[in-house]
Image 1 (cartoon, rainbow, N blue to C red):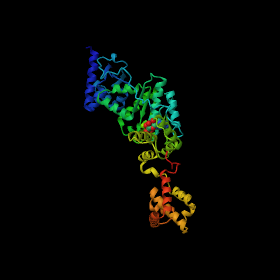
Image 2: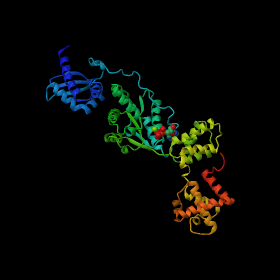
Image 3: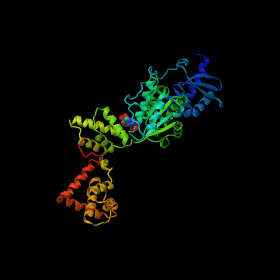
Image 4: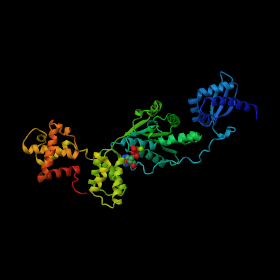
Length: 456
Ligand code: ADP
Ligand code: MG
């Protein structure tokens, strides 16, 4: 063993033992154990670290401790260290890598069913789709880097993310597309620490040509992971690699995310996806039923679209459920089956679309009594009855509260409403005309008046 080598090792040995006293063992094992001293003079020691990431991490987390340990070991107040990123393992003497790097690039995890071709575009998502498409066609362009797609659940964020990955691979199959959820990223990171495989982790993520991270809201409050992500982000970004992220909210509204991450995110483009409007829901249902080999009449499609409104996942779910129900129970797909499925999915909000006004309108058209009379003060018998009928129906169909009904019908108090409901209830038993009216309106509302009062 030559002299210099011995000195290097001794000095580093002293510094390391000081660090061992001062730092938790996981830090030593993860960050300091892989270090190899490679050069030394009176005032400076050169330390080889496995990657740029190691270097950044050590500097930002342990720089001060390392410096003071090195100074103590060199016995010099002016002492310093230099971290040198090992280019090739071979050049570092005796450095046994803690793991074997994978030969093959990590298999990308894009879902081949999520492509641009089957992503239905509408005013709610066209901006997001076009931005995603632009990114897929030329990843890494500064204008769109990073791209953040944000919005509520089931609105197509994950679909777009995978579509980008798939398109990039279609255009250039050799691209290294890394697609993970933020949870997977966190898990990979934590495991790499635990198993001493940080280099592998770094390799996986920092060699990506396109890094696609789903649901970054789960980074919230995970400081270490954010730190790690920050470094990954910077490295990729600086070398012009594309990053795309999805999130449930606008980046600056993400509490628990470090400001510097947020400000990095804002250097690119954020696009939102909105809930689909009626026409888009119809288009999606048509597409999804075709995809699933389900032949639904337009009326049925429209009925579902009227009720299942919040997101696309639910629309898709409704189609699948209809299929499942009819085949499992060997039932024909008729209105009842569809209504059941819709009701299952939207629950009590099934009829929430109907308002007091709708009810009054219906009563008015059936009885030929003007709406303003129905809600007015007239005591004329047929008008009073139409009014009572309306109150009864509001209570029965929409379940409006007594006071709300009273308020709508000219500020009457709730006892008036109770009285109205009771008297119609009683009357209908004997009065078949009234009973008919009630059934007719109830029926229409159960089909929700959307031209569905016939079987599909
Ligand atoms: P998010 O990630 O926003 O919660 P997803 O991307 O998982 O939503 O979408 C939920 C489901 O709806 C997926 O099956 C997806 O294919 C489908 N979907 C969402 N948006 C569209 C769209 N515009 N066109 C076709 N399918 C869509
Ligand atoms: Mg998603």
